[in-house]
Length: 175
Image 1 (cartoon, rainbow, N blue to C red):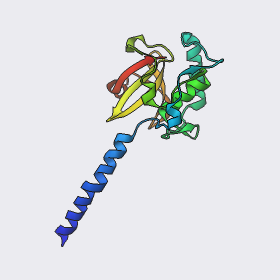
Image 2: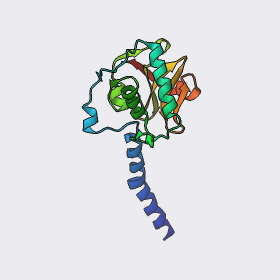
Image 3: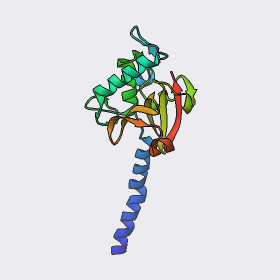
Image 4: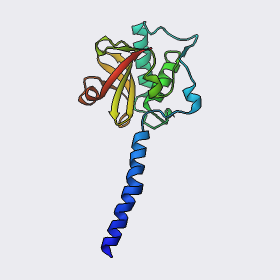
């Protein structure tokens, strides 16, 4: 009788629980999008600042950090009640740099052109592979530092040479 129960439990785990966990894991990542989000294209606005003006970009990024510092991570979040990494990047570019960019990490990872890690400048997007099919994005600020919404610490500035971020670094893109 006990063997029969263990067998049913094992069967349930293998047929229901593990596939559900695997599916959730594979589908996770920063910034799930809707069809409307996916149709958004990169575009400037009348208040767009030149991303070549590194001093002004840095100033805007630090201003954004001052306003959002510590805001908790929330998947699909787009407000100070909670924000995910790609949502934070999207809002920062829109509100501080005057640029409309895509909402998801996947879309952002194909924007602009690739940049070597040693050639980064303020406003470049930095990408990380943090898990199986899980991606993370932040905005390079200066001197090896980037601004992002961390799943564990909320909106923070981290260092690229941090053991964790260095290990998971994927690539960078310039818009």
